[in-house]
Picture 1 (tube, one colour):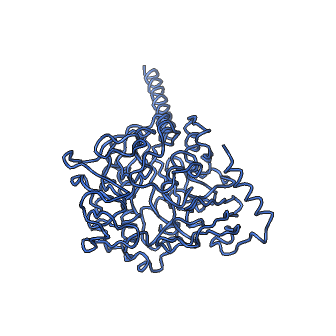
Picture 2 (cartoon, rainbow, N blue to C red):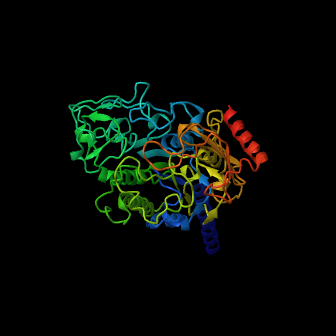
Picture 3 (cartoon, one colour):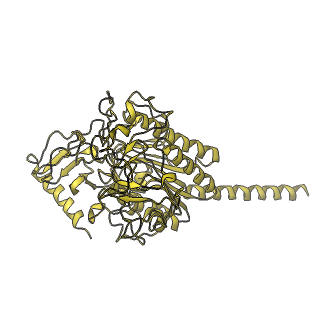
Length: 509
């Protein structure tokens, strides 16, 4: 009898062990995925990338995960980089994908292959919280007072809570799924980017009402003491308070994580920070010593910390893959008098890179990228060449989900590089600056910037070099990361090789 009991116990132990092994294997095979996509964060803004403003929570992600030194957004401005990120297609392949006005129609049409659609096909619950700036609604644009569709829910997301465009554009309201949050039907929203609507004061006519003065291009309707791009009136009960945006986004994210903790989830958490207007919550104001821009960096780091704490609290941190990056490079004066330039001190948002947001130079698109997944990635650093356009194909390959390669034409599978298992990544990638000026970066450390008739400096305010020149440019960015020596006349063979590589990608259909 004892022998039978012992054998039975042994068999039960084997069964339990096998089940646990199977559960662990399934968990590792299907991690939760949290992408923290920041706004205007430069290559040198984060502490572990050389920044002077403390970012301890983000630094921990890098110290215990995989830190990339050679990762790129696809564009030096937000709308095109976000479009490419989600669709696997370079935004410059079609017109109308530049920086979108706040009342733009949906740029990603229903039926388009997308990253959230891939996750959804793999059985994930999908959500997007934060800045959108990819347009909403049909060809007439969004119906702010009715059902706003199409949008994220029509391209693969199960849930959305959005800043429709940016914090500096009207309407300054949140959109949850298909509706403006807290909208009073008796106080309808009116929006125009062509002419003034209603009688709400503007920054141009009523500067005495401003708590933050505009410097360029942000002198229209005043909301919460800040003048914006565009005109609006109505929706008073729905208006956000800028100081509370980060808190509200974090609260929504925590709710999403709690509600989906029992199933695999994909959350695209798109922060407003550190885009203008840089209005941190009162508990962060004046705390960085670097002015409002530094304060919202502190707030961004707090945001990351809150999400990490929630994952730990729910017991799902180990099998949650977190990716932290930025949509483009940094800018100081981007429309408001917030002393970003005057109080920058020795902090170098671009580190040793030339240019910045909008620019064809490296600081426009080379961005921080940190990948942290305790159950699946060893800590370390990598200089593999990686582009955000490859997230779609990489996750598709890992999850064994087919995707439309004719539509997501530019996305490549580099899962092994993304998870630190390979030192081999892209052989080359394309960068897009303002005015659709394209550059090509190769894995051997060279960069080609195509000729342009554009100005040498950004014309509307920021003191940023565009990288534009009527002459061809070739840089050895491996040994000359600041792009000081144009080698076009010194290395004709390499110039032609790079030029041909770019042309082949552009002509690809």
